[in-house]
Length: 289
Ligand code: 6GU
Image (cartoon, rainbow, N blue to C red):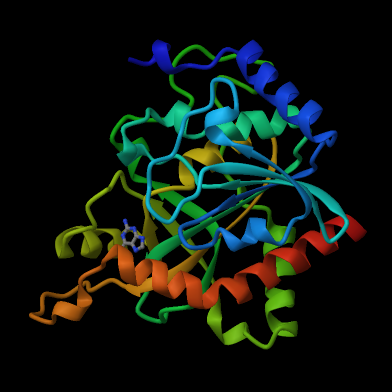
């Protein structure tokens, strides 16, 4: 199973060449748009668009609310490439395939990965619509023996045994907090721990209780394998969760505590503007520095 879905360096290089030649650009910042946050890519100026199905050797995403294209262009003066639509483990892809586009970004020249997602809030202080800047993660798929780095290691990407402490760049977190203040939304911005589960089902109450005890603040079905792949090849990582629903961690009969995809998409749509502003202002700061 593993080897069939491992992408050799040369294949990743071919895809990266296809994108840099096709766009005439070498992007410096990569963005992964979470559920309902596709408008992050719509901000890109003079976009060159690559539908996933037209990119050689690229997987095709299947989730509702996720387009399926790469957008290359400029944002706040910086050259960027954005994934509108990501690949999830629950779609049936192995993790190495899910995060393969991060390696494509690397070989296109990307130094910074911005990963976003919609997540359930476990920390009781979080409200729907809040933004949680990720400063660490608990990789439940890793606990279960799964990693995007399984299989042969190609040292051109990174080391066999990469460290993951300080994966989430502190300077970028601090800059984002400052931007949140300047935007007047500091009370809606938190810093916390994200956990990725396999999905596609949402969690049971007992699972959510267990995650809370482990120090998890928000839970979702993505991002962690992308961050691992990005850190392996030494990219700087900034990631945040948009809290689209509050998770119950006590038993109750209230139906409104059940997570559902429609609610997730509706909240994301409502908060797209704030998320776009945060991302564009942070990119501006990186570009100006
Ligand atoms: Cl409650 N759980 C998971 N796993 N992913 C989510 C979510 C919950 N809400 C949005 N995405």
